Image (cartoon, rainbow, N blue to C red):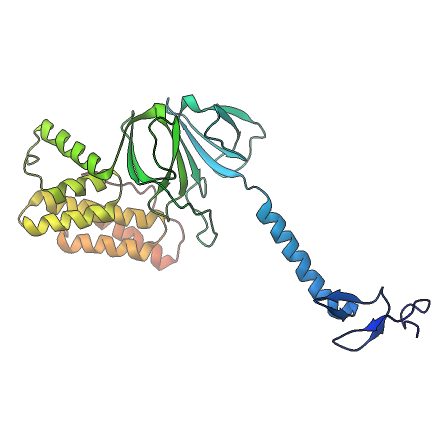
Length: 319
């Protein structure tokens, strides 16, 4: 029997879906069944798409890096491989919009403060995208740099002070930072949260500032969390301290500062309803709070217009 599409070829079988006879050129095999071109076409397309996706998954991604130098300079760029064991790496500089300079520069670790692997250069990353998740093996650390900046997170591997640099994974997975490579030569000290809280309390006691000599453990921990920008944890500790000292004006002020900064963090993430709730909560306690009044008004206008642009240059407040 000859193939109806190729008269010179013998029939080798028939389509398991429609029963059409065909030769080896007409039929394809999938999962042990013969299929004609019509019924094999969508399967072939799906296989091709899966092949492309698998290739994309295997292709190394270029890391978005914010490189901060010890002399205060900041450079944005992309990098294919960042080896913390090496002395340097190569970076393709870009602007904040991700547009490449077309050049490649050598970056020496010894000149750096830290390298931030970020989700986006401007901080407004697409929340629907999936980014690499790290599972830290080490404990929680507080890193204090020579310039006074403090960052907090979990060490990717068990912290070893003999290593020239180490990775820190932010505690807040909603942060724009995926990981931070800390350069050891730029560090003033590395502490556990308890060690840093004790250090902060000792330093405050030495300053003999008004009201600092009677800080409770809860308030001290609150100050620690506030300084490391973990405002939710700070608020929790301040409220615990407030239950013991309900008449403390200092604690009342700290609670409001923590609430305000939580609101600012919501604004930076464009979570405007939650930010407005924070500002309105402040105004219930302190109706004349100028900062909260201004931000609440801005947020109401933005939500009414359906705008997707955050209030201009929101800044966190310090205690």
